[in-house]
Length: 74
Image (tube, rainbow, N blue to C red; front, side, top):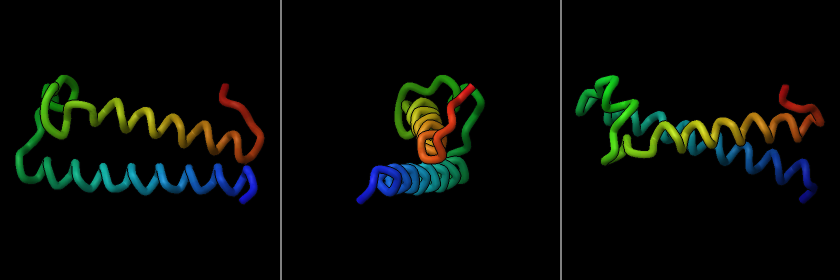
């Protein structure tokens, strides 16, 4: 597998995981409701690390996309 193929594979795996996280969040929200305080400051359950983990993956996806095409973030 080439380096580009490996980067594309990692990027797709992250996107798939992010989509699954979104689905789980939506299901959780429909079942339990989520206040702004819960979303931004929850320290337990599914929401405890959700935002940070999702943001880290999203940033990695952007970095991978730039690496694949040979550009850089500004």
